[in-house]
Image (cartoon, rainbow over all chains, first blue to last red; front, side, top):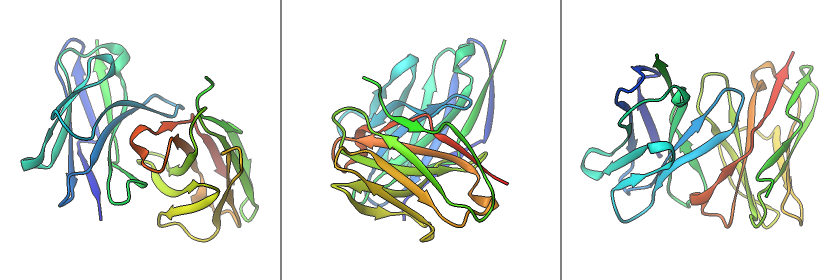
Length: 113
Length: 113
């Protein structure tokens, strides 16, 4: 079964510092991969996705992620953190019948002024 | 475009009662998936509806059931509520069963007391 692991349930960075949120998936077949952001009491907003093609994917709000098949990873990065980036981030994978999305447990990002 | 809309936004029910949550998909979308997000957890897939039929189901008991209407809107029903059913219930819609472009609603916060 597909599983998604996010390393670090809480990450703190200073404003202007690099953001790195880690995600690993388990699948013998590379799945489609996603990063979502969730603000308090809100639904999920898609940041970016990898389906096929270029392994470096750029998303909204300056975020990007790189699909590394050899490492089964899809880490999310942003060069310079902004206060508005404080939220919870979920990595997710879609595979098999392309119907069921499996989410990681989430990483709460705190941005320190 | 109103996006995915869910109602109600908040709901309080007593243990043993039944509840119905509603979802209207984004315009042009014909597929609806439901997720349960317990506090501090990632969303867990409940089931997906396409062409008014349940197409895939996650690891949830039969107390969880659903329906999709000809206009593609959907309902999630939960019978015999347990305290553990307290969660944010998210609806996601997509065009076709492949959820590569799933859009999420803001969710319904269900509290069982």
